[in-house]
Length: 226
Image (cartoon, rainbow, N blue to C red; front, side):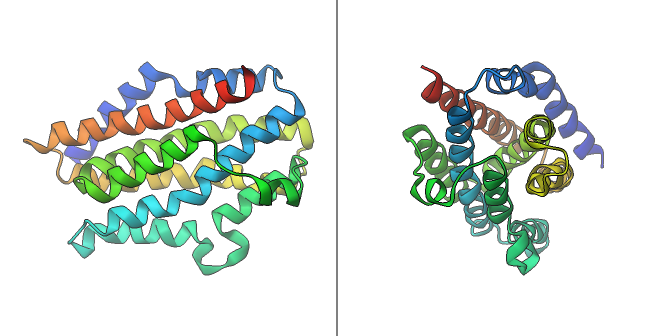
């Protein structure tokens, strides 16, 4: 618990400094600066990331030889797949969100990731698959926390725009809670090794998670507003 608390002080300080909730993408969203088409385009690119996320976790698992440390991540991956109920698979609930904001089935099927999203997905896959699992795991913990922090912003905006009774918003209401839990579970696993030479490796992973994900938001914003 002591090492977990020490690690949490580092991540809390990071989020205080970076203020991811005040990223220009979310400020523009809250101010209503996007056209309907821009909102759809941005949401579709996030969908391309949601589709990929379970693969990052799976890649991490291949590098972990202790089943006890793998178990929280296996459970995370289980939840990503709706606990084997297709209705609640995270990519499926996000697809419902897309339909709820007016994205057609054709638009979803024809959507392709833009270059920055391809770069993000490949970079995270490479980090999780080819480097020390603690570095990749620390990055995923930060990314889970980012999603937990911005989900209420997106959910509230969607409620205001499309109605509070819209059942398609369940993706974001679920992630407000689930991703906090997932982030803490990941931090707990990482914290077991948060000492000595591993500290620097873990802290670099935290920084990479913040860099990759905030850069992806920046690149998506620029792609559809320039």
